Image (tube, rainbow over all chains, first blue to last red):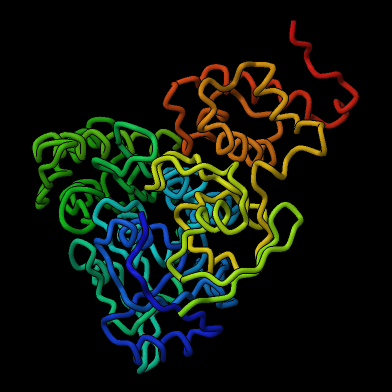
Length: 286
Length: 167
């Protein structure tokens, strides 16, 4: 399968890349790892006439901790995130989710900036970024702005990015001591997208849940927070019965799709079960 | 519209003009003439087109040749040293790790990265490491055995060991 013809530019800096996007308008697309865009172009579901390849811009691939935040450059690959010692220690939710994306070859090329910008409601990172209250640093012709994950993911394949904006960095407040997370993904076959997945980050203090955030993949046209579960558990005990009761509320306010992989009811069931398992897994360590 | 692409494949330099939409796998097969890398599904699933670029495996049907400009590429043809097969190739032979053989180049490239990253993987780790490669003969059992055998041969200090004999 051969994509439609396009022209191609390789800017060396982000301002150059933004300038190319401004010049080309809607006909241009940003190419990073290409593991969402190239398959779509091969199927000719996407036929941009111009690609701006940001893959060679230096200083966009990093994972570091600074000022109480973990900062991840847009070109960090899923593999980089999966194997990052910093993330395994501070944000196992994110490194654990990265390890479940696609397959090893895909993880070598796919980038977190690209995955976020693609805004696939079945993608794994969006629900994680939502649960972690991440902030996306975005550059455009008017300079830089920060977009909170809850405002960034708008709809299926639609983010809050303007056509001439590029994600530069993802910032996540370093979770406090006692806070940890996990990503539980349910799919039928390896490599598959999630039918439903749950991103859970919980802060346990003594025997109580000081804070909890649950992100849901595959439960609507964008990643969603299971706010019913969060309300039910925040400040409460972390006993089995509390967790079971809270997890029952995982599908509240969601609008899960119907497709070949499952009905909305099946997805609601999965959201509840995965939420319960995630909470049990996290609190079992305390 | 056409772009000049210079790459090193298995130690040999290649330079060609290509359309930006040329996929790397077509470049490797049709421009460089190295047909060991196969096109299977052409949809990023099957892994038959797996090659190594700057030390990382990729599915070469899901990358444009222009993105590989300047890269060091290793394909299945780059593994043997003269007439001596790479331990993984030898192990696939010894353990009957192939049936029709179509997936084999990609399987071996994926297995090579797996062992580079984890020299003594468990069976589960081998199966997870091959997540991106499909064998439609479903010959996975012997593929896993071949990788286990290769891991033993490739382990540090094991290089003097003779390859298993075929009787």
